[in-house]
Image (cartoon, rainbow, N blue to C red):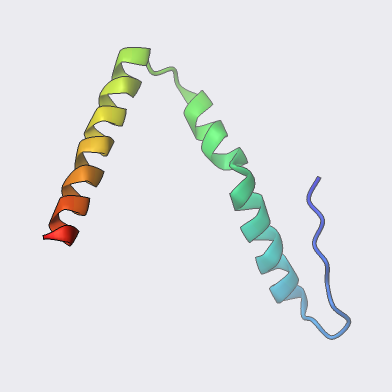
Length: 64
């Protein structure tokens, strides 16, 4: 359950924005999208390797 502390003079829009941010951090929407359709483990591993190579490339460019 998500709790949002709302101050006395705080607007509803601001409280809603806080709620959305906390909800996004829980990862519920991301998990729902992943469960929407099955992806084979070999495909997941392929995407992980591609992402790792991309991050490594960015780090190498930043260093030199």
